[in-house]
Length: 116
Picture 1 (cartoon, one colour):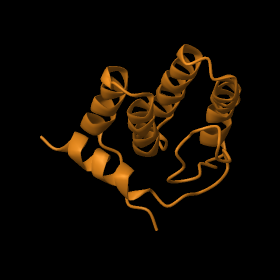
Picture 2 (picture 1 turned 45 degrees about the vertical axis):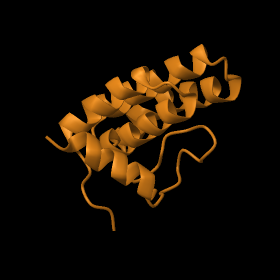
Picture 3 (picture 1 turned 90 degrees about the horizontal axis):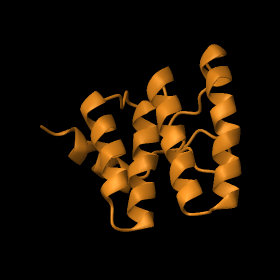
Picture 4 (picture 1 turned 135 degrees about the vertical axis):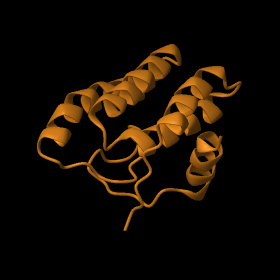
């Protein structure tokens, strides 16, 4: 069972934080956490995949670019048919249909970003 992770403050901070991270790894952690937080809401879900696509383009990561383009096409369908895999990180190296247990480091980052 997954707790409701929606937190507007955490979502905005995670997206903003991703662009300020010094390492690519940290930026992707912020984006994955933002995906976990926002994936059950249409606009945040679409926004985080757009951010992921931009990051993948900047890094010239062809596999991630293709994966994000595919996921951008799936977002409307997932919301229309209410088939969203909770906890999924949104990255191209995991199935777009796989429900996942949220990794502890993502939960810690989400909690930290959502704190006042």
